[in-house]
Length: 81
Image (cartoon, rainbow, N blue to C red):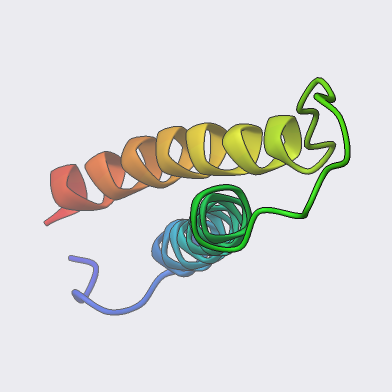
C-alpha cells in the first residue's frame, strides 16, 4: 500500500496550477492597467486617432490560457483526492 503523501505527480500538478494561476493573475493586472489607461486617464489627442493597445491581445491570452491550464490541472488534483 502506497502512503498518501506528496508524490511527484501531485507536486507537478500543484506547481503547474500555481504557475498558471500566477500567469492568469498577471494578465488580469495588465488588463486592469489597460482599462485604467483607457477610461480613467486617456491621453489627450489633438485629432481622432484609432485606438490600438498592443498589450491587449497578450493580456487576454494570458488570462484565457492561464485559467484553462489552471482549471484543468486543478480538476486533476481534485480527482486525486
